[in-house]
Image 1 (cartoon, rainbow, N blue to C red):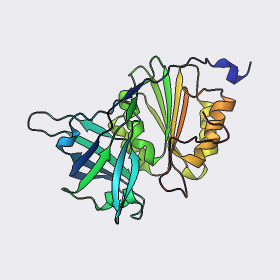
Image 2 (image 1 turned 90 degrees about the vertical axis):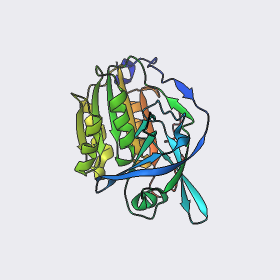
Image 3 (image 1 turned 180 degrees about the vertical axis):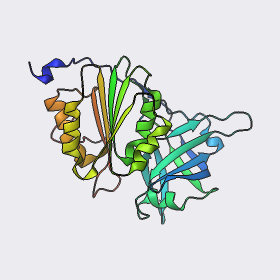
Image 4 (image 1 turned 120 degrees about the vertical axis):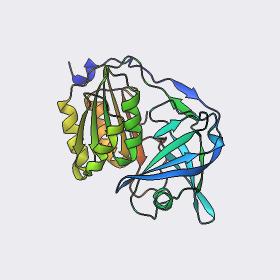
Length: 264
């Protein structure tokens, strides 16, 4: 029997909850550097009334002014806090800083209290799969907010291994906010991570109760996805791999097939 034959085909499906599509005008309430390469911008405003993001990897559209044009980028909200008496609702967005030329990082590097920013969505939430026993989360810096949300949302009984692609110690430190007892976190060299990730995966126990979730640079994730699908035999519900960005591509459509030769 091959490894692929060992896995069930009825892995729990993540239910979808649709939301009204609303564009919101918000104001920067606070800016905090989490590390030299990670910055948190907290947004407030009455337009946050009714905002919800129930899935760990939900995403919103964030609109950045670029000259006379507008650039839209997808972001996972790090945290949302509903308003209460005397305290306004607040939304945290975390930015991986890599220069000032790109619309998102350029805006974040210059953000000041009182600045305005518009967002839209999320259009839908993809809820947690029920009944899983373990999870393997694979992320680079751009996927850390979603990874932290996974850590906070998964039940305590679910054993979690996190593989972080990158050499910056701040990436692992970032996850301390949402870390749970027993979580295993390991860094993978960014320069050789496809082969290194596959080697690490082969050393892990991945059975029919394990969710594998991965997000980051699209091109580098293709070999990983092929390994999960073809060698380990994991279906689309059990192995969820998403390209958040792609080298040489401006504003990647992460809804498009990651691997055109093997689309879902």
